Image (cartoon, rainbow, N blue to C red):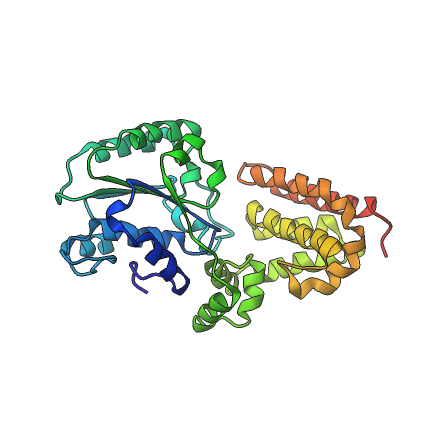
Length: 344
């Protein structure tokens, strides 16, 4: 798939955006769930701004100098503003989590924005637009966001800004107010399942459930190296009476599973447990419905534990003792179940 080609579920949104290209704003904020292809959509838009074809209409031509340079990743009038690791543009768009990767910065700092300012103020090399893509925009810390705001408020002629956000409410309200917000929809189950099947995924509906309906994340979920580890954790959670907290914590510590990933699995399990108890519905783990059903009558004790997981997610990238954190989370899980009634 070309970097300029949209995913099948994005064509309607693109047509809507390009209904009146002449009225596109200087700053556009693309929002939507992680794993639906917002970065691909943003890349196409950036290429369209930089396309030099006289008849580019509503799509980049793919063959002019501007398009070729953008495809090669070296267009002089394009800048990507992302965290220092350079991978944040895909980290929540379906990229496979590396359970052994070295932790890197997840922040866009003020120095990054100041470097961008020089680029924005320069004259275009190709006598056209100068395009900045910020991804994910919520990675800007407060100082960086305030510095970026100054550029948004008084944009130089020809400057275009595309912001991609997985969690747009974390952005400064003043930054949001300077952008036109354009929400990208999540594909329906049929469209996402068909696309995944075309990619060779077996049981697309299950992997879509595991990832909350995001097809790119589901694609990676289907082949992730940590699948056996998640299956093991869910089996332990579904049989709390036999859960050996110390042994399980040691297992996951040895496997070097990212703490954020582990907490996410726990959050989804708790969501399903509470949801099943209240509404009879399971969102993330339909393959664990039997175990969840056994525990659903005790879901009342999960509210405080869900808050505990929320706090743990915020600290997931801090250099804490992973084994002790896992032990604490699992002991708290057992305590939460116990508070709602004795084991069956």
